[in-house]
Image (tube, rainbow, N blue to C red; front, side, top):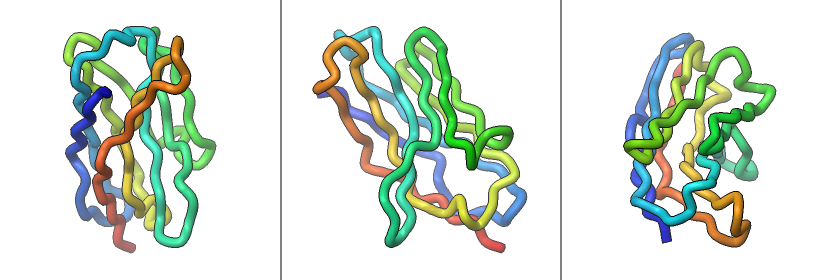
Length: 118
């Protein structure tokens, strides 16, 4: 199982920026997607952004133009640059890894709290 270690969460004022990082242990599944999901209190976990090992990206409409996902395949690390943060971005952010070849192979990180104050 791929191990994921997240970092970079914290408290920021509205309009500010944060960058999340997620480092993955080595995997034999080199054709994969990594991404970020978030869960606010009382709400379901939702997609924020994903990026494949080939560089294709996908964003939730609510973060388009504000968040940028990127990855360094040599370091097995994915990043989420979050700009123009809003109070509604407050949530626990979870890193996700999934194989694009074996769909049942996926992992979640432990989550990192992002709090945006108004």
